Length: 300
Image (cartoon, rainbow, N blue to C red):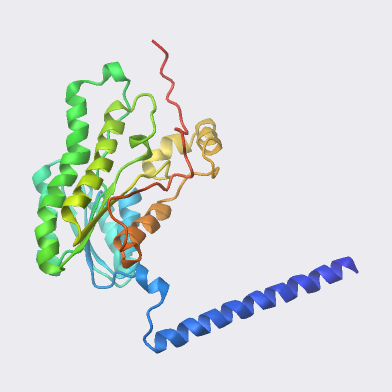
């Protein structure tokens, strides 16, 4: 009898939930029909144009596809054309357009040129995502001054070149817009072997705050500092059971992030949903307060 009562209670609960959802959907449909703006509409970027660097795979690809699903056309840039073509196909499947630019984005001039490409191709520019960047881990005493300069140029100078080129186009063609920089949790959490990468990403985070002050109020500038996200860049770690277990155990949410986690955060920040946010660094990292993977470098 207790099992029967439990089943009846569960069915009743489901019916009540379905009724609530049905009424909410009906209210949403009625409001839409009446022309009212609903909260989910603030996550739409219909008719806008975005430039996304490093968009051939991983976070950049997920962000570009997410923006297309929310209504934007995209200029996607990376080194490998075949990867970009695959992303462009997924963008086209959403009904939006993608323009592929295969280029070496360590070349500052090539990166800066993407702003004009967006206007030439689509007639406007609203959003810039500086996703390309990186630097390999290296012990501190093996990190040369030249390596620090290279990391800074690839992660910060490169982003600044595109921002500087994009701002006049955003103001002229869209009247205002949004810039998003992809930093890293290693830009705020100390860990061995990340002197070059962590320093560069920390600089990009503070560059974000400084740029926001200069570009207020017409252009918002924000950043995302992802934690351990399961992309191809993390395959070596994720495919090693011991290393993956260490990552997941040391992450409060006990899992790796997915590219869509970052794409959702990016859409919030560049869309009208985030219209009152600028100069901020969002941290979708599973709740990290310390690095979740230690590189085994011996003490001095």
